[in-house]
Length: 271
Image (cartoon, rainbow, N blue to C red; front, top):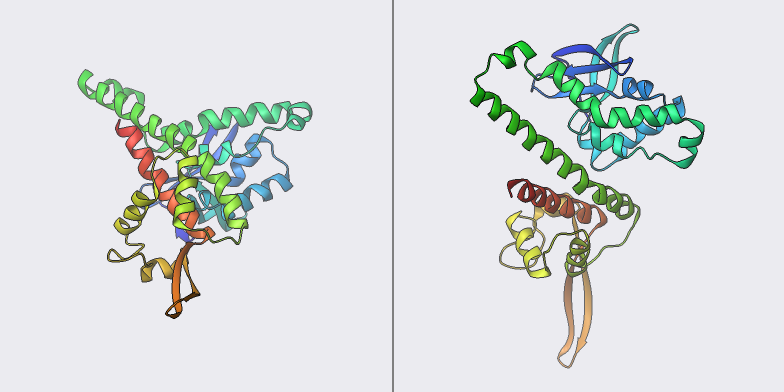
């Protein structure tokens, strides 16, 4: 996560608290992680855990960003998260039976943030004011409505699609096991994507991860540590023969399944 200069910064009122919203030069909107945690009512230790989650999570890390911002305490580096990733992050904060019993107000606020915080930030930075919206023609309002519904559907699909990926990524990255492409194709099918070994190899060729002429990792894939090539000796009637086997690393497993999930999500939305 890099450090960039902010473009537009404002405090957005939400659910009795304030959210720090920032719009960067590229037009993306980010929200201060600390402000979300404080608004929900998390403890200092819980806030630290959430910061670690965003920085270390293979998916959430892509939405995290350190911004250099002016605050009451001076210029500080603030951890923020892209509002497109906000519902996904909040969905990962589990509501445990203990939380329900000991902190029911935190549970209520968490649910409220999960459902509405992103819309509040989007309204503050992106959406047109109500009076400008009413000035649109009926046709333009219909287009705006259906565009919003399509974006909402895309986000809902993205969240549901990434939930099993997050669980898989946490397990895979803790593992040291390298697996065959054939074994990965079975895992992919368990994740709800109907693709066999042959089609998976074709995908890897399309993505330039393996060479088209033979089943050998490209230099690009090797630089990313997505594959390993294991060499073995085999005794044959004609002497000792050297054979090579391509295996997918834990990092490669997450990388490939994530790309397949993205393609699958786009197809679902398109349909």
